Image (cartoon, rainbow, N blue to C red; front, side, top):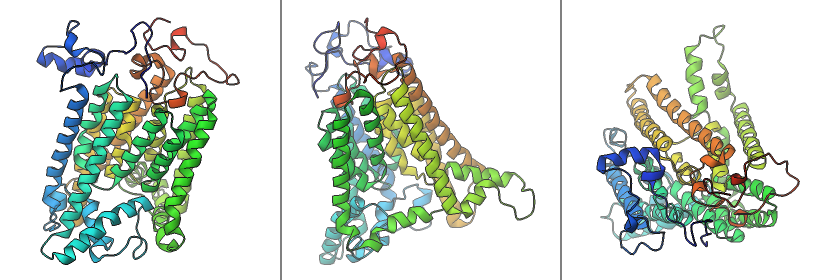
Length: 502
């Protein structure tokens, strides 16, 4: 994607420096001498003109490699698969990747879906088989190797490469703000959850899909987002913000192209399994339909509150306990609330004083799904990480959210250990408090994003870019004439960056 000039600055804008623009980093910088000075010319050159090896982008890429190495070390006590005395909980190193090598029959050479139902969408099943079956074949010829450990480490290598690629995508989308990618690269949640499951497969594909959209290749973007949705369902939600913003900008052809190619990719990946192995293919949908309230969700917090309130009569169920006993009603209520949230995001996208950026609406939609879902696993934080960085690259609220995720991670393993030993590690209220803190911080992030949409002059990305660097065909496009227009100051018109004279 070409870099658009910012009026009054020249052909290439200087990069953003967090020690100047972000209050948290400015304060922390006082420990090492304060913000970058006005005369630090060598460090303040525009992106692409630094003239030195350790550029911001290379530093951020090195940081994410360090973060992933720390994650591997954190998971190392569980890599041999000899989980004795609940070490997977006491050392907080449990990973589905290793456990499911055996649970899904890969250690016996079973082909996903053909020989065994898999609880994940098909591309994740393909991915498991593509690594697991060769490891099994190697183990047959070399009985001395630890197949589970080989399987985990090969998965960790590929998933880590996808995490590095995601950072590279963020750097490409934010060439004038390279330090934004450090939010992802240094995320504590990435240290703790990178290989708990295969979520980074969908994250990486979705990131490349957003990059393709930003570079005005809607068909490619649709294919990549469709493939991401075939790995985990949530990337399919990104088509909604694309369609809403395209409707406002009069660029529906590109959005419909992306949606159509995404549907083709999704169907093409699913059909080879759905037709011959329908029952095994439906395992993912059956599991999610019949699953009760899971740990750490809004509904779980409600069940806890039900238990604190005395029922009106013996045997009566509180509202959340009743929902847990009536899964169909729980499903429909969850879908309804998520649908209403999506309608609210669509209305915001169409009626905001200035057309929102794609990443802002995408973050709100995925966050709403997690808030109202009956399942919110520990590694789902990875879904929001790149979207949060692109939507609102501010360190304060981001770090508060990450602190909440770390607290939830520790409380979750305490809860697991208590369930395994039947001896509670701490009162249930501690776990509920950690879950509530996670939910509240995500909701607060949503509030900040909504505020930036309604007051675009507060949007840090628009302080650097004229419009939407992720928007592709939407970037700089005027709104269609039939939408109601709210009165706004001239400096908020599309094409003029916040803080720049109109």
